[in-house]
Amino acid sequence: MSFKKNVEDHLKHFAQSIGLGELALNENNACGLCFDDKMIVNIEYLEEDDCVVFVASIKQLYPHESKEAIYEKALLLNLQHHSMQGAYTALSNDKSELLLMKSMKASLDYGLFESNLEKFVNTLEGLINEFERVDENSSESPSSSSSSSDNNIPPKPPAGIMV
Image 1 (tube, one colour):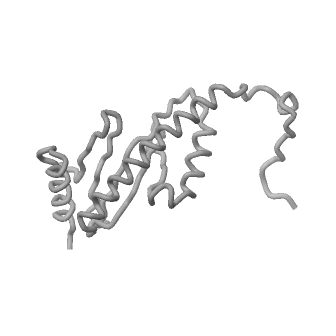
Image 2: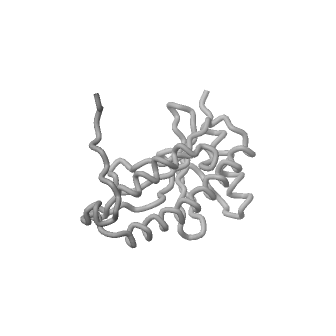
Image 3: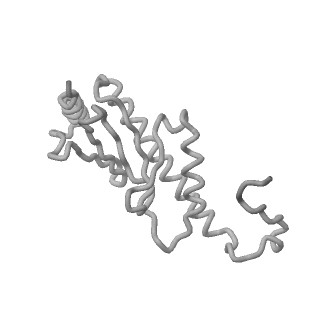
Protein backbone atom coordinates (compact mmCIF):
# COMPACT_ATOMS: atom_id res chain seq x y z
CA MET A 1 0.00 0.00 0.00
CA SER A 2 1.34 3.38 -0.98
CA PHE A 3 1.16 6.27 1.47
CA LYS A 4 1.64 8.92 -1.22
CA LYS A 5 -1.92 10.18 -0.72
CA ASN A 6 -1.19 10.53 3.00
CA VAL A 7 1.81 12.77 2.23
CA GLU A 8 -0.20 14.77 -0.32
CA ASP A 9 -2.98 15.29 2.26
CA HIS A 10 -0.42 16.49 4.82
CA LEU A 11 1.04 18.97 2.34
CA LYS A 12 -2.42 20.26 1.49
CA HIS A 13 -3.34 20.64 5.15
CA PHE A 14 -0.04 22.35 5.97
CA ALA A 15 -0.45 24.79 3.08
CA GLN A 16 -3.95 25.69 4.26
CA SER A 17 -2.79 26.12 7.86
CA ILE A 18 -0.19 28.73 6.86
CA GLY A 19 -2.34 30.40 4.22
CA LEU A 20 -0.22 29.23 1.33
CA GLY A 21 -2.98 28.07 -0.94
CA GLU A 22 -1.93 24.95 -2.82
CA LEU A 23 1.02 22.69 -2.10
CA ALA A 24 1.44 19.36 -3.87
CA LEU A 25 4.06 16.87 -4.98
CA ASN A 26 5.30 17.35 -8.53
CA GLU A 27 5.89 14.63 -11.14
CA ASN A 28 9.10 13.69 -9.29
CA ASN A 29 7.19 13.23 -6.01
CA ALA A 30 8.80 16.34 -4.51
CA CYS A 31 8.00 19.91 -3.57
CA GLY A 32 9.84 22.76 -1.93
CA LEU A 33 9.07 25.27 0.79
CA CYS A 34 10.99 28.47 1.51
CA PHE A 35 11.20 29.72 5.10
CA ASP A 36 12.36 33.23 6.06
CA ASP A 37 13.37 33.89 2.44
CA LYS A 38 16.60 31.92 2.93
CA MET A 39 15.91 28.31 3.93
CA ILE A 40 14.56 25.99 1.26
CA VAL A 41 13.26 22.65 2.45
CA ASN A 42 12.60 20.02 -0.20
CA ILE A 43 10.03 17.42 0.73
CA GLU A 44 10.33 14.17 -1.21
CA TYR A 45 8.16 11.08 -1.19
CA LEU A 46 10.14 7.91 -1.88
CA GLU A 47 7.60 5.43 -3.17
CA GLU A 48 9.89 2.38 -3.09
CA ASP A 49 10.54 2.94 0.65
CA ASP A 50 7.17 4.50 1.54
CA CYS A 51 8.93 7.32 3.32
CA VAL A 52 8.98 11.09 3.26
CA VAL A 53 12.33 12.88 3.33
CA PHE A 54 13.13 16.48 4.23
CA VAL A 55 16.28 17.80 2.53
CA ALA A 56 17.84 21.27 2.86
CA SER A 57 21.15 22.94 2.16
CA ILE A 58 23.06 24.08 5.23
CA LYS A 59 26.03 25.50 3.39
CA GLN A 60 27.40 25.88 -0.11
CA LEU A 61 30.87 24.30 -0.45
CA TYR A 62 33.41 25.84 -2.79
CA PRO A 63 36.34 23.99 -4.40
CA HIS A 64 38.93 26.52 -3.19
CA GLU A 65 37.94 26.52 0.51
CA SER A 66 39.38 24.26 3.17
CA LYS A 67 36.70 21.82 4.27
CA GLU A 68 38.40 20.01 7.15
CA ALA A 69 36.66 22.01 9.91
CA ILE A 70 33.33 21.78 8.07
CA TYR A 71 33.54 18.00 7.65
CA GLU A 72 34.66 17.52 11.25
CA LYS A 73 31.76 19.61 12.56
CA ALA A 74 29.26 17.82 10.29
CA LEU A 75 30.41 14.38 11.44
CA LEU A 76 30.34 15.37 15.12
CA LEU A 77 26.81 16.72 14.69
CA ASN A 78 25.64 13.33 13.44
CA LEU A 79 26.46 11.95 16.90
CA GLN A 80 24.06 14.47 18.49
CA HIS A 81 20.86 12.60 17.68
CA HIS A 82 18.78 14.41 20.30
CA SER A 83 19.85 17.96 19.45
CA MET A 84 19.61 17.17 15.74
CA GLN A 85 15.98 16.05 16.22
CA GLY A 86 16.71 12.82 14.31
CA ALA A 87 18.14 14.65 11.29
CA TYR A 88 21.65 14.15 9.96
CA THR A 89 24.20 15.95 7.83
CA ALA A 90 25.35 14.69 4.44
CA LEU A 91 27.17 15.85 1.32
CA SER A 92 25.31 16.41 -1.93
CA ASN A 93 26.18 13.96 -4.71
CA ASP A 94 28.45 16.52 -6.39
CA LYS A 95 29.97 17.55 -3.00
CA SER A 96 28.98 21.18 -3.58
CA GLU A 97 26.64 21.44 -0.58
CA LEU A 98 26.42 20.33 3.01
CA LEU A 99 22.88 19.03 3.52
CA LEU A 100 20.53 18.39 6.40
CA MET A 101 18.26 15.38 5.91
CA LYS A 102 15.53 13.59 7.80
CA SER A 103 13.58 10.51 6.73
CA MET A 104 10.28 9.33 8.20
CA LYS A 105 7.70 6.70 7.41
CA ALA A 106 5.09 8.16 5.06
CA SER A 107 2.36 6.62 7.19
CA LEU A 108 2.89 9.23 9.92
CA ASP A 109 -0.10 11.30 11.01
CA TYR A 110 -0.43 15.01 10.29
CA GLY A 111 0.58 16.08 13.81
CA LEU A 112 3.88 14.22 13.50
CA PHE A 113 4.44 15.54 9.99
CA GLU A 114 3.97 19.15 11.07
CA SER A 115 6.00 18.70 14.27
CA ASN A 116 8.88 17.07 12.38
CA LEU A 117 8.86 19.80 9.75
CA GLU A 118 8.97 22.51 12.42
CA LYS A 119 11.83 20.79 14.26
CA PHE A 120 13.67 20.29 10.97
CA VAL A 121 13.41 23.98 10.05
CA ASN A 122 14.54 25.03 13.55
CA THR A 123 17.48 22.63 13.39
CA LEU A 124 18.36 23.90 9.91
CA GLU A 125 18.35 27.52 11.06
CA GLY A 126 20.60 26.66 14.01
CA LEU A 127 23.04 24.77 11.77
CA ILE A 128 23.22 27.55 9.21
CA ASN A 129 24.21 29.92 12.04
CA GLU A 130 26.63 27.36 13.49
CA PHE A 131 28.43 26.85 10.18
CA GLU A 132 28.66 30.61 9.67
CA ARG A 133 30.60 30.67 12.98
CA VAL A 134 32.80 27.79 11.74
CA ASP A 135 33.58 29.89 8.63
CA GLU A 136 34.39 32.95 10.76
CA ASN A 137 36.65 30.95 13.10
CA SER A 138 38.51 29.24 10.27
CA SER A 139 39.14 32.58 8.55
CA GLU A 140 40.53 34.03 11.80
CA SER A 141 42.79 31.08 12.61
CA PRO A 142 46.46 31.10 11.59
CA SER A 143 47.21 29.53 8.23
CA SER A 144 47.69 25.81 8.17
CA SER A 145 51.12 26.33 6.67
CA SER A 146 52.61 27.43 10.00
CA SER A 147 54.48 24.63 11.73
CA SER A 148 53.15 23.09 14.92
CA SER A 149 56.27 24.26 16.83
CA ASP A 150 55.28 27.87 16.10
CA ASN A 151 52.10 27.34 18.13
CA ASN A 152 53.71 25.21 20.92
CA ILE A 153 51.47 22.33 19.90
CA PRO A 154 53.10 18.91 19.65
CA PRO A 155 52.83 17.29 16.22
CA LYS A 156 50.07 14.75 15.74
CA PRO A 157 51.22 11.12 15.59
CA PRO A 158 50.95 9.51 12.15
CA ALA A 159 47.60 7.91 11.41
CA GLY A 160 47.41 4.18 11.03
CA ILE A 161 47.61 1.03 13.05
CA MET A 162 50.32 0.95 15.70
CA VAL A 163 51.80 -2.43 16.67
